[in-house]
Image 1 (cartoon, rainbow, N blue to C red):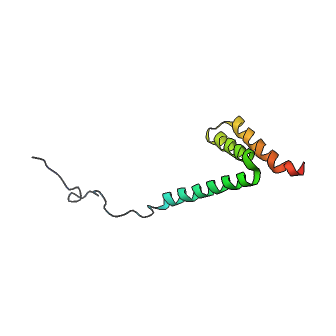
Image 2: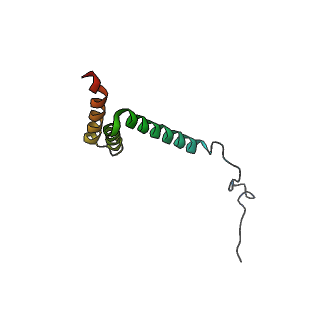
Length: 87
């Protein structure tokens, strides 16, 4: 024999069956950031070619891995590509 108590009957909050407000905010923000990220990647590759993509990847990996040398190499590649026509 198993006794099951309803916590709401004893004044407890109990499990809520109502949908929480703002439940779709996080997936929407994640989707928006993914679209912006992919759009930026495509723009860099279209504008600066494979070296621009390599610079962007190195910069991103360096920032996420907390590695200043890797992010500095990526930033230097991107800076050289952007300033190339001015040199």
